[in-house]
Structure formats: structure tokens, C-alpha cells
Image (cartoon, rainbow, N blue to C red; front, side):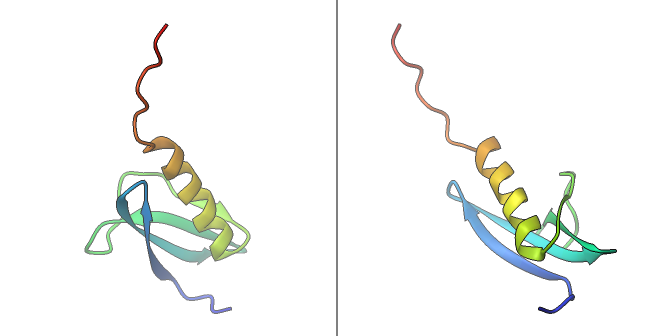
Length: 74
């Protein structure tokens, strides 16, 4: 596997995210980047592989930006 940085476009809950994965020391960093490739204010996530780092970030985005559920009747 290449150790070069790359951008993965992923649709999560109907919204398109650009996730950049890049090697940092002995691990990989995944972060959301804007359309110009600049980082957003969101903190990076780390993993042993590029796929692992992107999966952790994607999972977090999926939970945080989950569509609102209607409140159940009491």
C-alpha cells in the first residue's frame, strides 16, 4: 500500500464529505477537508492504516450527523 496522502469522497447520511488520509509517523491521520483541500475545524482521527483511520472518522460523522428521529409519543 502506498504511503502517499489521498482524498476519499464519501457520502454519509446524504451529505458528501472529502476525507484526506495521510501518513503521520507510524500511523495514519484522517481529516475532513474542504473543496480546496484545506482542513476544516474538525479534529483529525488516527488509525494503524489509512482505511482504519478513515473508518473511525466516517463512523463518528455518521453518528453525529444522523438524521433527526421524530420524538416518540409518550
